[in-house]
Image 1 (cartoon, rainbow, N blue to C red):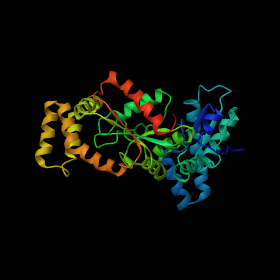
Image 2 (cartoon, rainbow, N blue to C red; image 1 turned 90 degrees about the vertical axis):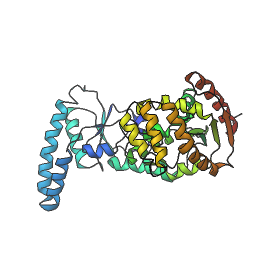
Image 3 (cartoon, rainbow, N blue to C red; image 1 turned 45 degrees about the horizontal axis):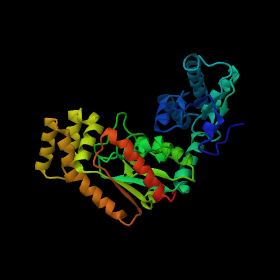
Image 4 (tube, one colour; image 1 turned 180 degrees about the vertical axis):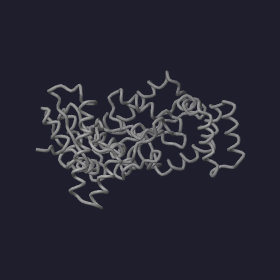
Length: 354
């Protein structure tokens, strides 16, 4: 009998050796179950061809041609990716709806002698659980926001909090973006659905008896939108703000964004995106600082003219929120561990755990 997923955490609990997505590469790229590998039984062109034959010629002919393609691709996988699997290997297989593609591949694997199982409802059943977690359920844990102007080392502090056994959700890590115009990371952002799947897994794993710390963000991280339930919880949460002088934040940004500043063309292109917001002479000043390699001065001027005014305007919406301010003069690497310890103490105070 196909396996019915009742929780986003079922995959970890059930302990399959492999999770195999037999959908086409483009379907897999948009989103897939956590840890899944893609062994398509029809590639994108083959899937389009079979679908066209089904609609325009004959369902029977489409099934016959599709079966030949599935068998041929399954043989390739058996001789390739699966060649080293032993007799005790236990895979979980799924497709879009848990129908013909996964069923056909599972039949072949079971004839080999492997203990293969199917996902009831396929990827759509998984996606339904994601939607329920994000849009139908309130956030499981009380939320605490880690706030602070641009360059306050919030993301790095979040990682240090996780190392101190504090529950955190790293939205920028899940979105593979640093949350600003300059925030592009190598590899680009996942799709909206893939981001939602990652976030839903993180939310489902929360311990409701403990707070969860989330970095202050807008309603979007790069191009990816936060779900309304989480965004509402963030808006009502107590806020712990790291307050550091602009010089310390500029020095931190020059280190943290070294990947961007080393790519002069990308840095210039990103500065140019601000032309509609600032006078031409300001844009030229920023280009000149980039050309001179004075990245600390560039970061400081960007914060003074662009980021800080916008951040302060955004923060004004939360002036009445409970919380704490943690002042620091240094964001150097050697100072961050002590700063994280102060943040932990503040979390305990604002969440009523002391």
